[in-house]
Image (cartoon, rainbow, N blue to C red; front, side, top):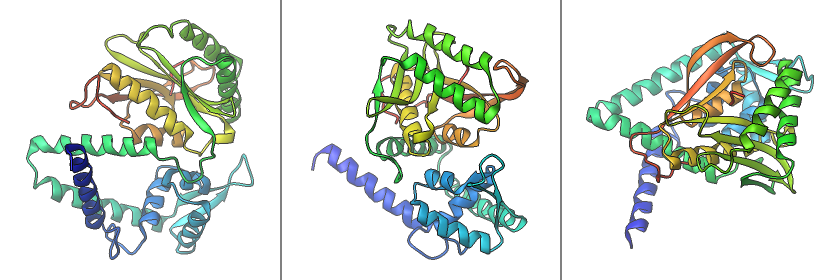
Length: 327
């Protein structure tokens, strides 16, 4: 067995041990009688109103399984359902008072479990645990599409014919419907993207598109020039409605962050605004943290703008493997 094979087997053994210690093999999980999927669903619902479809995507479970699990949580009085005001076919989920108490108990148990484990480590080892888990989780997420992902969606690097118009269209249609943005927003997207594409010959800049049958159905970019100070700017991340919830957005984000890490950027920044709970969850899952909020109208409407920052881990460098939008 060579060194690489030995490393693989050691990681597999450590992963099996984690699964057992966390309680996934049976018995009490998270200090209660709920299944792992139910515990994770409650935590996702705690972040803000979500639909069953969004829960299925985030947990990477089949919709039928999620439907049965959520039905039990509703019947137990821990989750409530409300018809979506914009689409009567959808039901938004939220925690009841009982559900909030349950989630508080789950958090208390999990924090105690982590704190007890960290007490057995040296202080210098604590950050290594966090960085290792983040890197491993992101790498697994990048290689494994979610169960509902449609076949034939590929991620391609570099300019594609029609890219400027198509990315602008996806942004304009989605944010007009969801946030009430209008012509000013569309013009900002088109103008900024056109200017950026003229700089794609620079090695610190990159753009990626999700393609299905030759059609652009998603995008993301890393602008390595406009912020300076060795900071990468994550821009124009979006997926078309037809592939929303498929995992395409996560694959695009993984490609962009892998590029930023390989280039050795100390930080990656992105600008967005509050209310986009699914997007925020995705950003935070790969290491972004919200560092600033303020009221602004740069996109043509008053919103709570947000700045997110992801730092390059100390253990990473320009050649390491790791696996939004200010317009």
